[in-house]
Length: 329
Image (cartoon, rainbow, N blue to C red; front, side):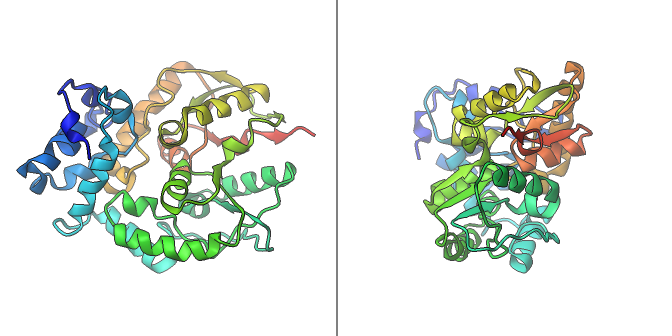
């Protein structure tokens, strides 16, 4: 790790969306938790404060010393497994993975297991909470000529478990999933967190849906003015160009987009915050919802199931990018 580069400028603290939320004020902040604590005895007493980070990478982008703060936070969380009892929401998530193979229970029935060479991997939240999004993505892929499977044998990618320090369980999932993924030439995802996990920890050929859309022309039935919720792991995890590709695709399809400076700020849905600290997560979502309400938009378009889930809880109409587009033949 490279925490020793810290010059105490405070850039990471000012950039942290949790620390700057009213419900997140108890969070000591990224520098205290992930930069200072690992180098000093405080690492033994930081406790569950390390779990309040959404892993949004905003601190890393702000850091002039290029410290890998998110990796340091993940390493700290790994050590918590043996020193602190899991939070109730995190315990429930681990139990669900043990019982169902995914972080949430669901009754998804739209499996497509026809031996195609491309796999659409919706992720746990897609399958368990947003089957309408899964159907929209599958339909869009069919319409642009990408034949694909949706496999009932593919389990959680392990990203949610890594984010709460459950590395052994995540590695077990990786081994199970590789037996499934090895049958495919390409895996397509809806969740940027899944994309990052499969790219970085599995080393397979994986692309987020928005990375497949930029060279195609679509139409849209999304009426009215819409804002964006740019997912943290799409812009700061995968590529800022992937986020801009989403914008270009929507604009070319005729969507009336309102660009806001807050569009890429974290909604509070990631990093285990939603399950571990739901009050803080919802406070962050409400703050974002207020931004959109003040802008006078009908709703937001995003490319992340976690963003969709959290912002809908805050009362905002949300469309996945797949639900805002139709193939223009």
